[in-house]
Image (cartoon, rainbow, N blue to C red; front, side):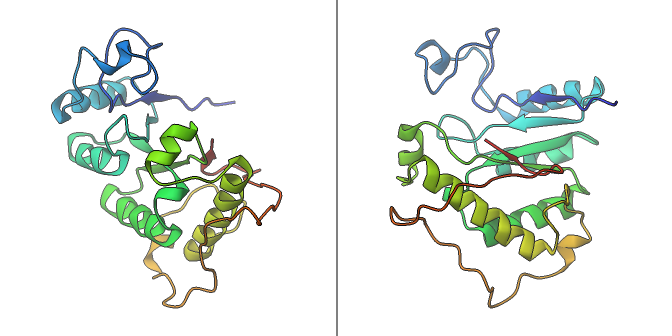
Length: 200
């Protein structure tokens, strides 16, 4: 059974410790290596040279934006894929689909998605997201359903090709993405039984 390996892109800065987290520990806030684009390119090129498949890029107020940073690294690399993390509460599914399609086209299929359902409450609230745990998972379920509809793929499809991105999103989508309210208590579902975006 083949093993797919990924590395981590330190868009918050880098150092010798893998324990310190810049958004939770005082020592992690002052990293020895700043995340300038030249240093990140060196890391990405080294990871690519060593044969890794992709690089996870984090999301949050404590690091650089994953979409913009990895897009800037496309011209500095040749093969490595970027696992771009983002939260459904920070953008609409239609915009996320547009970003993903554009990225896939300009990168020749080098985008992987990491859908981050939630995290620490303080971090979520910095972006105006006050939903509780179950509401966030219900939102993610709806978010993924809308994205699948835009791409025209089924639940069992694990990747979105550049061909699937040629279709334009409907001008009047049947689905409307809404924020879950406290009255919306649907059972949270966020499952891709046959692979697909990672939900955390």
